[in-house]
Length: 312
Image (cartoon, rainbow, N blue to C red; front, side, top):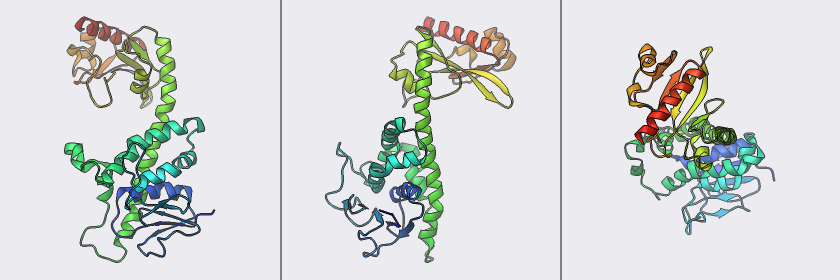
């Protein structure tokens, strides 16, 4: 069936129908996006997808609302918003439209659902308090998207619709970036796994370039690894980075810090402490150091391993 109308509610908008619109307008670019509360238009019909309005969830009828009772729930009992419902039924096709490889579709779909869609669902349904984000509560994506609404006293006839359409490409940029990031992590996982095998029992992992590595290191059970080295290209030159490995995704604590004596040093000062000609800098927080050559960073990594093992 050809989709000719994408129908959601008019008035003020929230993240769930805005993000749903990102997915649906990608898949059905020729369809008319209609924001209304006209019951005739928000009722199922040929060529329509209706979402976040209509008080029903019926895939065969093309209606994806979550405001009715009983409301649609995930298998684990957590509530869907319209975004979760749209992602559940159209997410795989959306990923194909963004050229995510078929072999990676389930991985990216699941990761995006848990890390991006579910938080929107929970906030929209009041299943979590915004305060759980602490001082960053106003910086969550749903909060930021809602700042794009018109001012409360802008009552011009098209204010809400114009604001919605202006917010749509901004929301699209976040969705596409999040998908790209997850697809890239999938590609990185294969490279990191190969590097772990090559490293054997060494405590330093060498990668061919900067890439996400912690999740793959954890998945491989490579608990012996303490540091990572890789080349960095930029400004027409290549240097080498030595980085720590965080203990988890929710902490900055590392398996081992770089030597305390390096903290905040750069250039000749760092070279004097390390004995490495070409040492460039070490961050004051001891999570990254840089040298201008592979030989230099390998020596710095050796010293970091010795210091970490002595401290342990």
